[in-house]
Image (cartoon, rainbow, N blue to C red):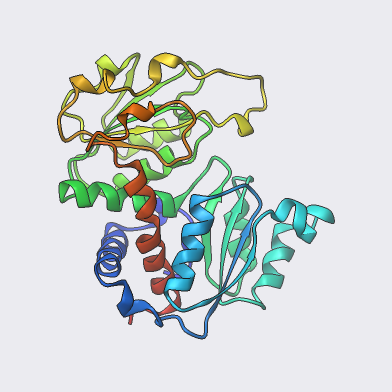
Length: 304
C-alpha cells in the first residue's frame, strides 16, 4: 500500500490488517511513540477541519514524527493566493515531507496529488467523493462494538448526497459479507446514483426509507449526518426536522443499536440523547487517533 486514497480500492485483507494494527495501537500506544522518529509529515487542509486535522496531527506526534502544517490553505498558501495547482503544491511538499495529508473540496484532488507525488498521500477528505480514514475509524468503532464487520445492518440518515462519509463507509463495508443498507434522507439529498449503482454491483441489499419507522428495530447502527450547506450550489435545502434523533425516536430500536455521527453535529441529534450508552459518536471521533496512527505506520514503515 503506497497511498491511502479510497476504500473502494482496498481489499478485505488490507482493511483487516489496518484494523488489527489500529487495535494494537489503541491497546499499547507507547509502543509506537518513536516508530516514525526522523520522519516529517505535512498536513495541508483547503477546507475547515477540527477532528480530521487534529486527530491526524495527534497521530503524527504520537508516532514520533515531525509535523509541518497549513490549516487554511485556501487563504494562507500559494494555492489560494496565487492559484497554484494541486499538482505543483504536491510536487513542492514532496520535497519537504515524507508523507502528505491533504483535504480539498475537489472530488479529484487526491487522484491529482497521487499522480505527481513521490511520497505517500493520505486523503483527509476529497470533495463529496471520499473520506477513507473516516470510514476506517467508523469501521473500527463498529467492529469494537459488535466484534465483526460481517453481516452489518446499517442505516444512513440525513444529507447523503453531499456528504462523503456515507459513500466511503458503504464502499468499505462492501468488502465484508452480508452488508445491508437502509437510507433515510431529506428529499433531494438521497444517495447519488453512482453509489446506488455501486451497491447493486456489490450485491448489497439497499432500502430507501421515508421515516425512522421504516428502519428495522434491530439495525446494528444508525449513521446520522449533518446537512452539508457549504457544498450546496443549486439552492438551499433545509434538512427535515423529522430526521432528528431523539430519545423518543430511539425507543423503538434495539438496546445495542449504535448511533454514529462523523461530527460536527448541528441539530440532527438531540443533546439529551448524549447520555444514552448507544450514543458513541464521541468515542467514534476519538478512534480517529489510533486508526490514523495505523495508516501512518503502515505507509511509512513504522509497523515493522
